[in-house]
Each structure stands twice: as structure tokens, then as C-alpha cells.
Image 1: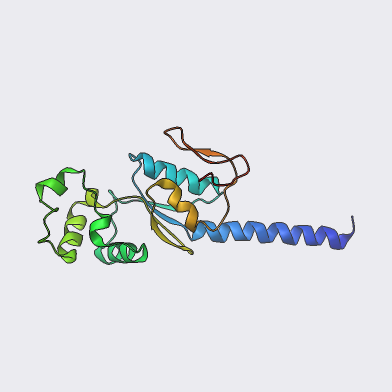
Image 2: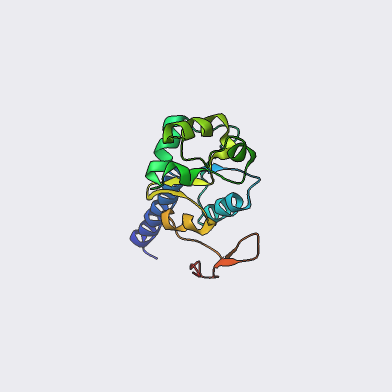
Length: 164
């Protein structure tokens, strides 16, 4: 092997490592470790060799401004970002049309359990990752291995390709 070939290989390896570091530093996930969809989403991100910034939103909820931006960037309406199967939703009668988006955002701040999850932010976009494989549309790196969700559904084959 010539010295030039060796140098080229090292430069390529450095570039690949730098690309992975850059991708890793730009992925943020609003996570609930008690949620299977959230755990599957995190596992899919890590299957691309990305270690995201993980924010447990029930402990550290996003500010109202951050939440507003997440919802807008994901292309959602505020009501689409609210969990409906939790106690505050029914107790506050949030299904009533009388609540404005501002009021709904205020409730989401008071009761973070109302925030649907997981939200993932990358340089390629923001998504409410439901189902979990929605995250694949915005990951900057490809899947490295096969992946099967907790419920047994395989979503990535042995070649790192999405199955559906």
C-alpha cells in the first residue's frame, strides 16, 4: 500500500467519524421511558449509530415557546399533539371545542402528560414519531442492523432497509 492510499483511507475514516459525530449532536428526542413507542423510536435512532440528546419531557417539559415550535415544525395542529387517553384530558374536558390553541398549550405546560410523544428533531425535520418508524424519515444516517420493535414487528431487515 502506498503512503497516499493509506492517507486517503485515514482521511475517509475521519470524514465518516466526523459525519457521525455531527449527526449525533444534531438529534434531539423528547422521550418517555415508560412508553413503548418512545423506547422503539430511541432504539431506531441508536440503530443508526446516533446517540441523541434525550429529554425526558415529563421531568423537563419544553417551554411553551419550544412546544409551540415543535408542533409547528412537525406540521401538526395543537390538538394533534395532545394525548387523549390520560386523566387530565377527560377531567379538563379538553375534547370541547371551546379551548383555544393557547389554552391547550397552557394545559400541556401544566400537565406534561398531555404532550404526545416522542417528538424527534434532526437537521432533516421534526416529527411526532407515532408510529416509531416515522423517525426513519428524518434520520441523517442509515440503519445499521435489523430491527424488531418490542411488539415483535420487524421494521428493518438485515441489510438495514425499511420493510414497509
